[in-house]
Image (cartoon, rainbow, N blue to C red; front, side, top):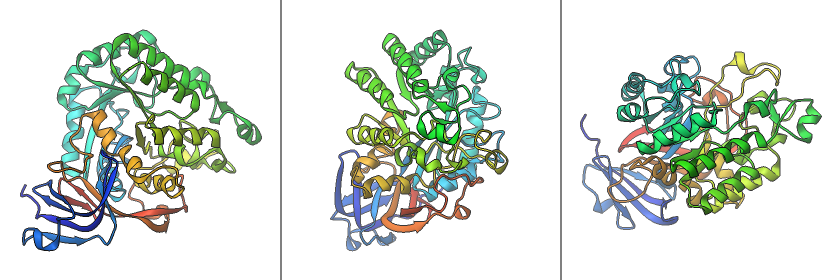
Length: 430
């Protein structure tokens, strides 16, 4: 495939999430890589065939890396396809999607890894990287072929939305992963403690007459995992933390030097249990939306760097599974296209700086996954996003690119229009 023509972004706010710096200037893209940065990049200093883009003060930053998204292929194409998910990602400034392994069949065979990578090359607008199953069939019993799956192209290992119940199985999985230098991503949830719960346990759930989910259902499993990480020396990432008890456990693990990182959903960072309103099923999520005090704790931990990564937790659900009574509706919401705009609420409220926020969606996930992207520096892949962080709009779900429309931000007032997304120097969205 021939290389795209050079592109120059001029008069931009260049955000470097790695150094937590911002400067005014330009960015020159040549042969799919960043060739020049800073005030010296001007119209008269770029090759004559260059496509000139006057930014007028818009932000130019590394494209976002979303470490947790459900993509329906293979087996659930009615919910999402690689093509539709990648179109939504590009429209939201996301240049790399890390796909969950809970497809049908699950990603527990190198052939399925190869299928996803081939389909992505053929149909995706952004980079799509498969997570492989940690256990065969996502059954939580027998360890998957971690070495073969990594060789086929899996970037991490997880049982998707499922938690490995058996501690001995988890220990063995961490040991095998350590021996292959692989990353384990785990969903921390004690299903017995969750029981029939459908939203966060507390006064709000009681008022709505709904069974609650205690925060200990998450933290008990996280604390077990962290002790097993200490035992095995494996690399471990808690997919989603959502409460202060879990944050305290992560802080202790960091202080003791464990190779443990964690992520948080943009939903838990920007919404709370009051947003559920009168049984709004689009806000039935897992982890559930919690009280405002818990949300504030997550924002503080993100600002302090204790939470490493912000994810969309993109989980499309069709009308048949969402237009039901709250207790019967499926968990999950779409989010990859709105993750950036929703996160900018935290910047507008003065809770976090834009460079630090972007670090959690670019450089930090790239570091954890061992990717070369996610950085604004010379020679880095030209996976970039241009957006106006102050451009207001009202979200119309009909305009979204996902197959499903179950967004928790239905008709919400948001800021941050993505004007252009580049992947390897090619325009993926404009």
